[in-house]
Image (cartoon, rainbow, N blue to C red; front, side, top):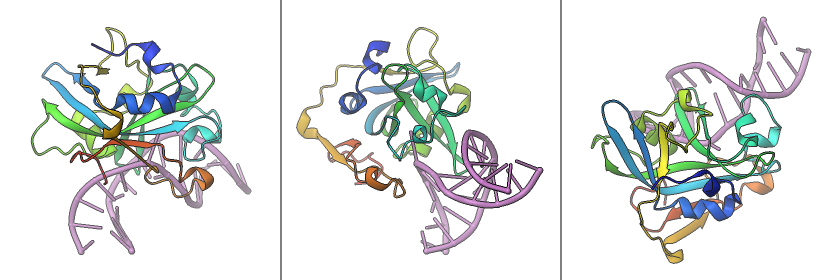
Length: 187
DNA sequence: CTACAGATCTAT
DNA sequence: TAGATCTGTAGC
């Protein structure tokens, strides 16, 4: 079943590990693409120096200040997209970056999904989906619970990737991934 | 208006 | 370890 809005309107660090083992799904006229989420990173609150929202509310970050269950998608380094699901209640900026999925169906065998830029390529994600809802019948990209149970000892925590500039926040263990999963972006 | 850094990835 | 490539944001 598709995750609904109440799932996303909750504390981000509690929600993040619960995304592991859930399924990212997109549907176009041609096909449905499915991948199991195996790695995420949390970007939490107005003081997190690694988060775009720490520079305040701008046109770009406005969606992070809104209610959970919307997509935040941006172009990075001129070439790659990053896919985030917004979390928490309105007024508190937070989102979870989906860093890697395990291919399940509809993804060409040569398409890698072990990294935020690569999984967006594999799912055809770009900024046309930015600020669109991840819930409801109109969603073109959403997350499903398919009954996979992840135990606490299968989940590993580590500092986030590529946020060396974030001062005290660079070492926060806000990256969550499945232990020993070969599709995690870095081990 | 201009400058520049960046939640990446690939090849060297 | 550097280069590709472009947009949001800040600074003047």
